[in-house]
Image (cartoon, rainbow, N blue to C red; front, side):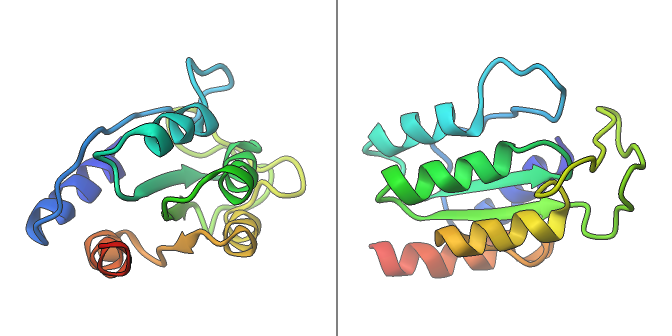
Length: 138
């Protein structure tokens, strides 16, 4: 979505290339998961780090954090949209809704931090955070 465009623009502005961009979406049925994509990025020699942009509702980011912790050597940065979203209210075109424990943005941020994912505090910091993370990898 739109945050993907923002991330791409910021990467370009700080001189970072993008090997692949994948839009998974927040719909109840998806063609692939963050885990599917993480597996491919982990195997790709051109990919040095991954930026995951998530949203409220569903367990996808938590599942991705668990997979990252157990299976990945490459750094992952994560951002979760919807920090101010109230529980039970539908948000966005896909109707994202917080309905269970672990589905709020704040809970997902904590899950990602506990797994070792570098949490990006704001979309305005995608590029700067990626530059910092990649400086440690190179």
